[in-house]
Length: 261
Length: 257
Image 1 (tube, rainbow over the protein chains, first blue to last red):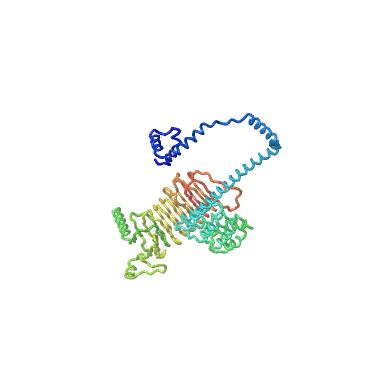
Image 2: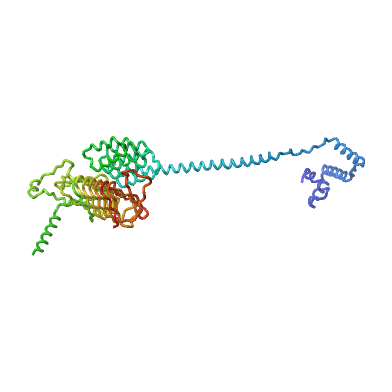
């Protein structure tokens, strides 16, 4: 233990709170070291002076004057005005509640609307994707080398409510160009459901001039008569002039002409 | 003695029939066989995986004439005889095309044997009839005036003729693809098992549709114009593959087998 350590612990030494060993070493050190002995004596004196000093009591005068001052100070203070909550008109608060409810409700509705719009979009894209898939499958099938597969594809189109132009063109191509007359006949039947389209109407009229199979000719005449297509009259009259046209076909043509005029 | 003579005669006949030249072609890698002819075709099922054409005896070919053509090659305007039997056989991918080069006057029909699982296309030209027995895969037939007679088939079948009559007896019906028969002036006569599942579309523009099946016909809505497409559509045993039978002026018969 050097001198600074001893000085730091002197207060504790005087108070007598140190361990026996520490007390002994400090005792020995103070005996030998004059400077530390001085410090010990000074500290001891100071502590003794503190303990001996009596606590000064305020006089009764002081106490009364303090209370007077306090009273005076209180008087000086401006009067405190209590802040009254502003009078609310009852209809206003009702409106406010209504407005907040309305905001909440609009928020809810808006959220719901956006959500449903999103889901509707999703459903719509899903549906168009599915339709696209079906149409692509159909377009692939309609060119198949097996005639029964082509007929199957043609029959699928009858399930479509609004086939796009690609499908209609594929059907018209089958009706005009398929090597198998049953496929041509099925295509004509399928197209009879889409006679709202001008493309389909003109293609049916064209079939009358190109088709040589009487079964298909009869079918197409019936379709055109049903939709009252007057433009079919000319090609129908031309069939009557054909020497190779069988009698029953001419009969059908005549019945058709009678209904169109 | 008389019976002996008949037996001998029959024996001789079969011997001659056996002696008739047959043509064989392997069908490995072939899925479909197409025939083009102007004469009648009789198609049955053979046991081997090959095409066998027989009975193509030339009616005009007598012995002395055969002698004359010895060492010579027949020439045809419509193709190249690569079989020695008046047929041109060519391969297009997995399709074998058999083209009859002889005139219908000279060849009065021929017989064909094929394995039953092979797809066939038969075009009997202007005058030929077609008979098919036992082919279980897809059949496509086209004739002009020839009759079409189908037995033990399953479909899919696509048959069209101008004035011929179509007769068909189906064993079980393949549900994969539709069956469609159409004739302009002939009849359509089809027999199917009573438990067949099908969507029926029966139509005769001028003739009548007959059946011994008991089903309700979906009535067309509203007033129909004169000469309306008199199509009968109905479901048989809750529906299935489409069977479409059409005749413009003939009748349509649908029978229970």
